[in-house]
Length: 163
Image: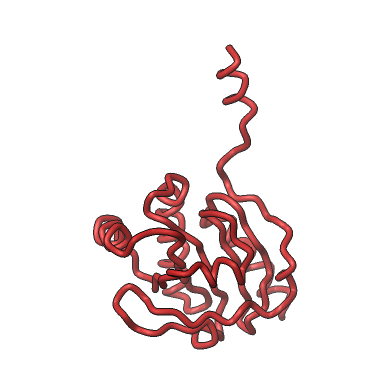
């Protein structure tokens, strides 16, 4: 009976917006290597909205979230107004490569071997995501599994606010 009560009162795994000292400020500068050995910088991705998603292949909520990220990225890649950047959180390259091959990931996934990127963003564990505007300013921090519709709505709101 106690287990049922615990499960019934457990919060949803859906992402919630969280406080962060980064909100309204420029995102930390990211200079990292992607899974193919190419250098990626956050500055090079400016000009469109960017979802920085902290991910691990061993993270079950990250696995559940993946189709939502793929839908968001596909929709916005076609429109050219937003993209995704994955940051590998405490995971080994072989496991991430296997996940990418099996699940299909069409956005850059950068490694964070010493945890500097996670530390700079104040990430405690995956999945955590940050929506960054085209000028590099952090708009929202999410903890938990993001939904494509949730992200789409925030991008629309931010675009309307800029107009």
